[in-house]
Amino acid sequence: MSMMNDVNLLVCSDLHGSNKAKELIGNALEDDPFDAVIICGDFTTDGTTKYVREVLETVSLPLLAVPGNCDSEAVVWLLEEHDRSVHSKRVELKGVRFYGFGGAPPSPYRMPFEVDEKMIADKLRASAVRGGVMVTHTPAYGFNDMSSSGHHMGSSAILEVVQEFRPRVALSGHIHESRGSEVSKGTMFVNPGPAKEGYYAKVRVGKTVRAVLCSI
Image (tube, rainbow, N blue to C red; front, side, top):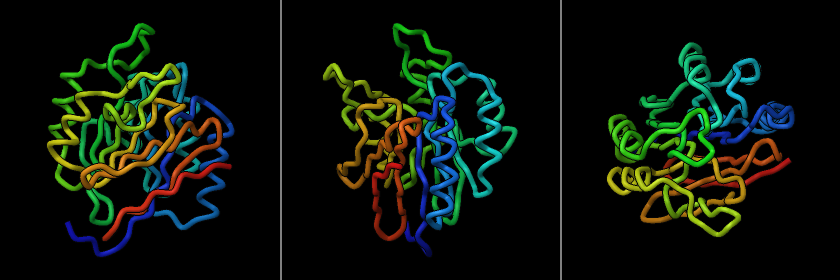
């Protein structure tokens, strides 16, 4: 897919209601000329919407987000209400097509937004497009998904969709300790790390794709 212009993205995830994460976004937007902000879920830890509203109000640029497993349905509705959601849908910005799905597969912890792998695959596939930018909360299995116990915690359903549609970029979070950027078969996988700890990423999508992991 040809691009007329580069699109510069501020990518963050796992804010978990942190003031540090909110300040990070504001400071990063002052320091660099971004075109859009991408948030890969877990705005909250308890699913309440007050903090989410505060984050949305600090960003005047286009913002696209998916919910995390710690977010609630109310967070999804709020993102939809503000036209900031890429959860189970496709959105185009400056010629780049974004699609995504939030939440995480079921866990023993029974978090507010857990979805079985089949639904993740079906919903993500329904909005997917070749060569786009995939936005999920959970990483694809095997990519930036290693837990502190040494186990891969990513989604096999998301990996299937990656293999089928080959996005140029796959953005995710969720596994706080697996911050990183790697390329496989034309797809760049990026986990910016938890914004609550001051981590984010700069991702440029154009004729080439480039990711820089950053911190404050």
